[in-house]
Length: 198
Image (cartoon, rainbow, N blue to C red; front, side, top):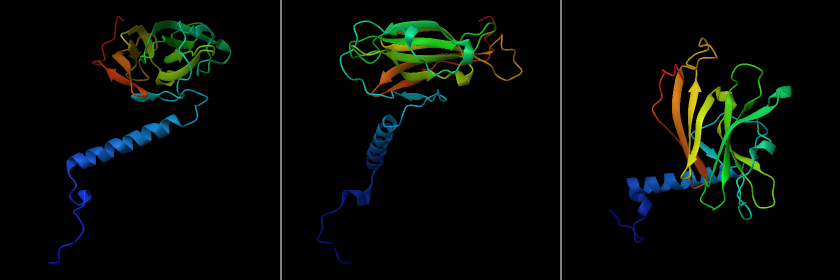
């Protein structure tokens, strides 16, 4: 057998750490590509990671943005939208507070599904939605919204099937989101099918 005069190449004897480094690099490329996608005109189904659609530019505003004048990606037709709840806090550690808003269509009766949106405002600019944490298309109601120490928490109420009356959600999930790197990462508490009395 003839030996090569070239030095050994590291990739010829790949170890798990090499595959891990490659996977990490690929994940970073995919995440960066997600930031370059155009912002959708309507809300889309949410995933466990919600990417911010635009980079923050300029200095953060001194006060949290008011969600009342924000255009949310929620089509309610002539019924209009209502901000059912909101909470403020510095979510990304830049020193400026953001607002988290629970928004739903203004229905005359019943409880229409809600969305949870993160709103930010740069100094001198109008407030804008930068992330959708819960999409109304998921048909969930939202209660108990809080922002504490950069963490968003809420209780999500849903339905196990189409046969469950819309007045009485039978599923409950405690969910939380926190800013990590360039995305809001969702964590969930124990979910159950015993939301009666909520």
